[in-house]
Image (cartoon, rainbow, N blue to C red; front, side, top):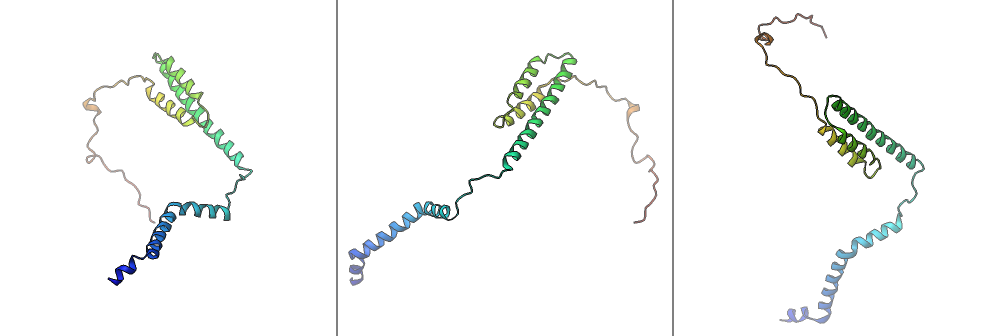
Length: 153
């Protein structure tokens, strides 16, 4: 009974409440405080390398060249389909419109559109015939083996 009375004292209850509040506050805002201290000790580098702009321009030029090359390939396929008598004027206009999206933000969408157009280009049907008996290959086990020379290694 004496132990229960000592556990219910005001200062012990307040101490336990303060400890729980400190634990809760540490969980809630501890990461923020750690980030602020880390930022004060090691601020992020705000200046970019002088070559970063040149590298970015080179990458943009290369990606733009890839897109233009894909446009040329799709246009060649569309021209071949037009030579075979297919009506593909709308496909060529769509390909040209996809080329207008040659900006870093829309370049992946332009590549996707051109690849979809490449699949939509009509192609001439191949002429097939049935195989004749004379076209069949002889059994591979009946054919003589080619003679070769053994090489010593």
